Amino acid sequence: MSCAVPAVSCLGVRKTFYEKDETLAYLPQYRGLAGRLRYAGLRPRPIRAVDGVTFEVGRGEIFGILGPNGSGKSTLVRLMATLLLPDAGTVTIFGHDAARDRLAVRHLINRVSVEAAFFKKLSALENLRYAARLYGLPPREGLEKALGILERLGFDRRKAFGSLENLSRGMQQKVAVARALFTSPVVLLLDEPTTGLDPRSKRDVQDFVLEIRETHDTTVVLTSHDMAEADRLCDRVAFIDEGRFVVQGSPADLKKQYEHLRPDGPVSLEDIFLEVTGKAWPGEEDA
Image (cartoon, rainbow, N blue to C red; front, side, top):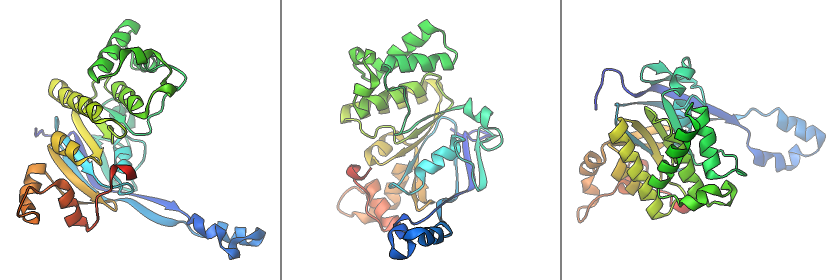
C-alpha cells in the first residue's frame, strides 16, 4: 500500500468559521433599530472546525474518519475536495496542492455526499447520462455504463426512468454513488455515503466500494456514523472530535489496544470512541 508520494496528505490543517449567536437577536436589548445596530456590530465567534489535523493515506487504502455531527469530518472532506481553502497547513492529493493546483486535484478525485445535487425533474438515468457527457463519454457508452453501475448497486432498472424527485432518499444516494464512479476516480471521497440506505442497499454500496478498490486501485477516504461499515471497509480509521484526531489506527489494532475496556467480551469501535472522547456515540436518528 505504501508509495513514495501518498495518495492523500494533510499536514497541520486548520479551518475556522465565524458565526454570530443568533439567539442574542431575540434579547430585549437588541430590539428596535438601535438594538439591531448594536447586534450587527457584535463580533462573530470563531468555531474551529478542523484543528491541526495531520495524516496520510496510501494508494489503494480505505481510510475512515469517524465522528459525530459537528466534529469536523465533512469540513475535512471539503478541504480535500478543493471546495474550501485551509486557513493553515496543506492538503495534497498525489503531490498536488489542493489550494494551488485545484484543477489537477479535481481530475483525480470524485466526491459523494449526503447533500448531493441533481436535476430532480429528470430521471436517474437522464442525470447520469448528463454526467457522462460532462466526463466526455460517448452517449452509448454513457448509457451502458450508467445502467451497469445502477444494476451493480441493486437499483431497480424500472425506476431509473422515473423522475428523481419521486425516488426515496436512499435511492437518490445510490444515484450519487453511481455518478461518482463514472470516471473510476483515483481518489474517492465518500462523505457518509450510505446514510438513509436500508441494510441491503448499504451492503450493495459497500461491496461496490471494495470492488472499485480492487479493480482500479482506488484510494478511498470515508466518513461514517456506521461502526460496522467502518469495521468492514476501512484499513485504518481515525476518530475526530471537535476538529482534532484523537486516535487513529487499524480497527484490529485499536481493538487490541483497548481490549481492557471489555474483559468479558469483544470491544467495539464505539467503546473506543467513548473512552477516548468521554462522549457517547450518536445514534443514526441523530445523523
